Image 1: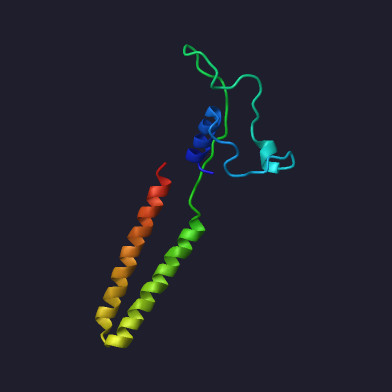
Image 2: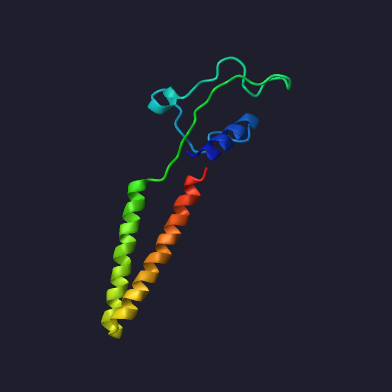
Length: 122
């Protein structure tokens, strides 16, 4: 769960707007739920304006799966090669076939790079 969803659900539960939205089974046998912090005493939202609330939480770091990104780029290289070979086969012009393949490869590599930088910019 990314940090935006975590904070969204935390704020919605505080206001009482959600009741188990993801239908998670909250039994005591869940290993990951036993490791999460539990509320002890007052809520961190119950504080006066003059003092800062004392509390701690879980810092969730998400990252793209770099191996999957590498496989996507490998697939794009193979795809551009196939497009080049098909163009060469049907239109019998080698220079234009590989030019089209290189253009497809560069355009898709730029698109994948833009997606990568969008998700790593947090």
